[in-house]
Length: 213
Image 1 (cartoon, rainbow, N blue to C red):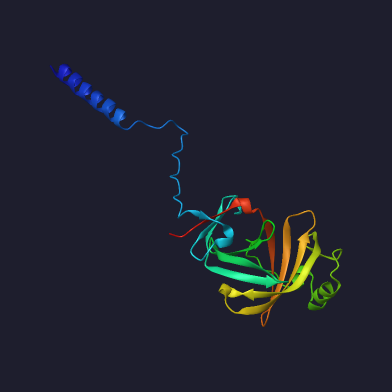
Image 2: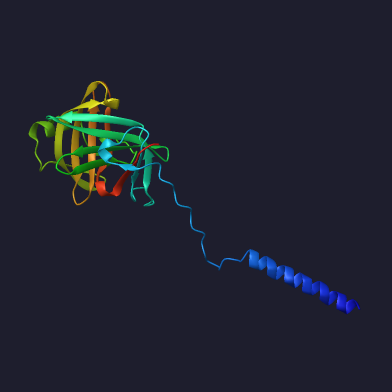
């Protein structure tokens, strides 16, 4: 009698276990639950038409090769030699990022994605040497920095319109990394110290802008 009762209880327990397994099948070991898709904020728009509040996504541009996404918090403008182009500013992982978008024959995009700033002594420059680069405009001139040669590319005065407001004077020197894709960008705004950062040319095809709802 006791044996029969035990068998009945075990049978019921087995049926219950099988029923639970059928309701909640275990995933094979090593299977990873996929991340849910990220919903787009809105329809994509042309980079040139990006406005504050829009989200810019640059494919694979973060340090870990993930996408670099930021919300535009400033739309600026630049002007020189009769041409005008735009600047987009935002924050990525708590640091500022900048894009300059020049719509000429093709879309040209320069990005400052690395927040590191340098001083004139850091890059082996002085105000006198910058003035010499400016006066000579010699493309064979260069500076040595980070163990690399940076060829002089250009220097000129720009009109800078923060938030597309009043114009301010800005002087810029650009040096291109020999054998690399980076540029050394040296800027001097009226009444402010020199600002020196590394920039890079970006492929416009790798950038998507989502309109804020």
